[in-house]
Length: 161
Image 1: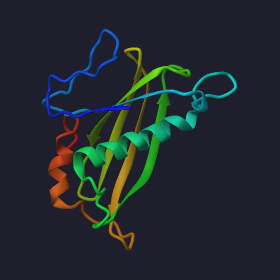
Image 2: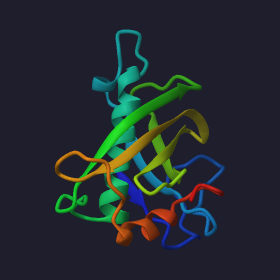
Image 3: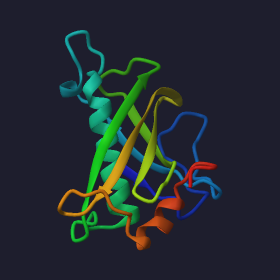
């Protein structure tokens, strides 16, 4: 798996088909890549539905660790997934290379939506989103710490922060 950070807008994701994707300076995009394995597929040979939710979680955790806070804010509270959605657009199969793009949408005081786009061979194969809320250790919803809000905004969609 490879991770591409938006620190350099000219960085492209290796292995993508002809339409190379780049980080946009006006709306940062976090990219995470993986390869589908046999364990990710069903008897028909296509990818299990639940894997896309798992990949959303992996991409979200890598983004948060790499770009927001390496200890995942464990000293200050917990991140709770309130909602998760995924819409399929094309089937994927074992050994397909998957590129996941993550952006922040609707950043609020205590919550945010993360948007995910999945690509294989240069074509979009799915998209999803998650609503994340921040809570203190007593599981009471509370505001995101100020030191992470600016970092989250770097990955906001237009109008998302």
